[in-house]
Structures are given as structure tokens and as C-alpha cells.
Image (cartoon, rainbow, N blue to C red; front, side, top):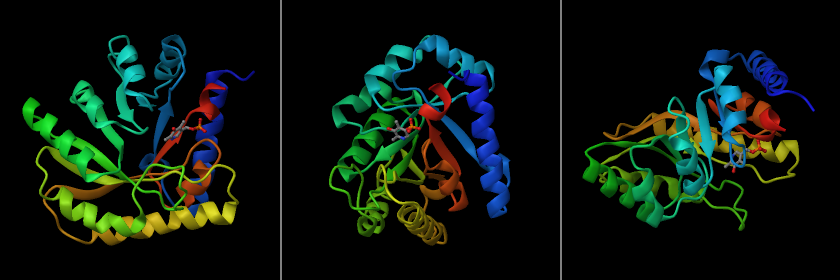
Length: 225
Ligand SMILES: *Cc1c(COP(=O)(O)O)cnc(C)c1O
């Protein structure tokens, strides 16, 4: 089995290659280490190697690791239930998985209560796969309109997942249509909406995502397995 250090250098190499191929700079790309099911000891190893942005799917798991890793910057990347929002407000750098007005409103309400503003991304189900969370691409504009009137949140970009096992051309099509949407929204002016982060790509497809415009990639197995 490869060490975390070896895995990390492979991932960095792939990021560099994808950047070179698409004329981008590596320092534009944030590597998010997805630490679901990874014990704190192994997470410390990767943090010692300089990766401090961590992604968790489940609130409970994030909270169980939170106190032990005070230097981590936590990202929620999995489906978030409204009744769990209160427990993580103020503890996240970015919530990637906001997919409904109700959820955005609850994040706003709890943030206002705490006197803070929470940064979020809107999760889009580009492929329209039924098993997936996320709003349809068609709904994004309406969602943005709704978010402009919600206090306590800043929408900082978009997130998507490609279907598992899809062909490369299909994955590319999905990533590039979200990139188009991202660029389209970024030309508009809103108070609490800005398009700075495009979170796309996991272990199997992050190189494609970078070529198609992602600036946050979420890698789990590629680092810890
Ligand atoms: C698990 C997960 C990842 C990482 O997947 P790997 O294939 O392990 O790299 C990325 N994003 C989300 C939303 C996930 O749930």
C-alpha cells in the first residue's frame, strides 16, 4: 500500500499535468482532502504535509473530529439536513452541498443568530441522475434569486458530482456545462453572490474537472487508500 505522502505527491502531479494541459496555474486549485471514515491519526499525517482543507459528508463525523484537529478548515460536502445545520454553524469554511431554498434559509437563520455569515456553494445535479442530491441546472437562476434575499449567507460558487462510472466524454460534458453556468452567473452583480469557487472532481475524475474549470477538487480514496 502506498503511503499518504506518496499518494499526495501523485495527486499533486496529476493536478500539475491537468493545469499544464489547460493553461492554468496550480496555485488556483485547492485540494480538499475528503476524510470521511479516515481516523484522526491519518488525517494528522496529511495535515503535516500541508493539506489543511478537509471535507466530510456527515455532520456527526465532522463534529467528532472537530476538537481534535484545531488547525483544520472544514468543508461539508455531503447532503445536509436542516435539523443538523445549527450544530455546525461557525465551524465550517465552506458548505458545498446546499441544494434547496429551505436549507439556505436555515443556514441563514442560524448564522444570523450567531452573528456570522456562512459561505456556501450551490450543489447542482447536472446529469439529472435521480439517485443524486442537488438542484437541476434549470433551477440555479431561481435559487440565486432566492439567495439574494437571505441574510447570513454568501453564495461563493457551485458544486457538482459526476455520475460514478460515466464515460469520460459524459463527465466532461457535465463539468463543462456547470462551468458555463458559473461563468454566466459571474457576469451578474448581486450583493451576496459571487462566483469564486467551482467544486468539481473526485479521485477518479479530478484531472478532467480541472481541465474543465474546477478550482476545488475533492479527493478521498486517491489520498487515503
Ligand atoms: C466521498 C466524496 C468525495 C471523494 O470521493 P473519492 O472517490 O474518495 O475521491 C468527493 N465528493 C463527495 C461529495 C463525496 O461524498
